Length: 253
Image 1 (tube, rainbow, N blue to C red):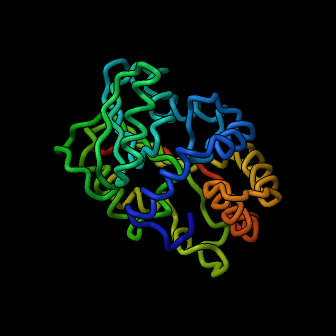
Image 2 (tube, rainbow, N blue to C red; image 1 turned 60 degrees about the vertical axis):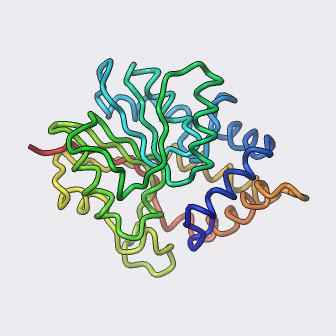
């Protein structure tokens, strides 16, 4: 997904292309070690899900809000492991349609709704944890997303997000979604404490291998594979200028 293709309509088209391209899913799953039902639209490997689940500190029947949930795979797996109640939210109606079908196919109880990172429509202090996988870079003003997460989280609730940070925040070669941004500082301003930014170099190694294969693909008429190859070309140009991170924080009282 290119930096400027961040409208809900663009993501609707992207998800629709994914629904008819099992080859793209197979390539991603092989590199990340994901089971076929995961239907990833992000880049967290199977080996990273346990760290995410642990950091969320969920107990059975807690409400987990998966923001920018995509096709629902990561949230469904975290909810299964923790026995939490899952609410997934994405601004793409097509993503929500596919996430609902994915949960039904796995016979998992979950609710999926259209909503954005900065405007969920949920009541204050209504969820116990917030998860955001590889999506924060798409938000023009991340501080608004952090403020919304803080608003809907109960006091003491946990937030975990995954993504990337520029090694040099002022490096003009990195994309605008990362340039000038430090997730730790934004979360602290939004009212979070215990903010930890963990380097995930093992995830980055798997991701690099995926991109290096993707640039060699011959996608033909498969638009999802074309998108994957085009993204690989762009990502590899600046890959070493960023680091892979998992960020966790607690909603302060």
